[in-house]
Image 1 (spheres, rainbow, N blue to C red):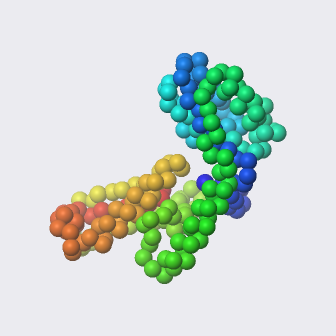
Image 2: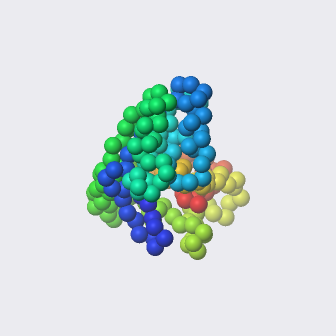
Image 3: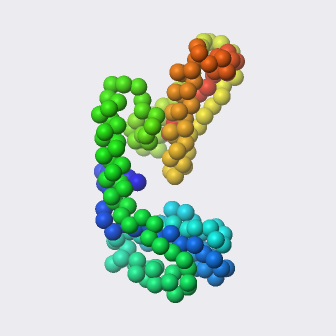
Length: 203
């Protein structure tokens, strides 16, 4: 829910960013949504793309598209209405959700400053690792009771694709579970006696 411009500046979505939830109930309705989704222009952002009849579709509409795009917000709503596609405003103000998320992140950082990593909230890119696409290191963690031992490596590669945001958090949870459970959980002890888990939380 954060967007970077070319300079790396992070800004939040402001008012008028809305998410429309539509449910196609006929073949013609689904084909219309498929047609919108297949277009290469960026006037509509499909959070949940069309897939089948009676499956909801979520579409985010950017305020700039209201004036710069041939398909404007009102036209989207009018077309959905004309095609008798069941729809509603699913999120009235995405910017407000982003503002609340920023407040949560700030509070989390204050509470966990200098302490163990917080596993209850999503972490920013800077907190979980780097990439090679822009010349930054990729951080890999290896968990082992004896690095010189000849053990099989169990490799976890997370957050390969941009919208797989939960996979990075999953990797961090696995790391925490193994490291905190060693010595008290016999299953984790058995795992580390024969294998070395390795993880990259962000590729």
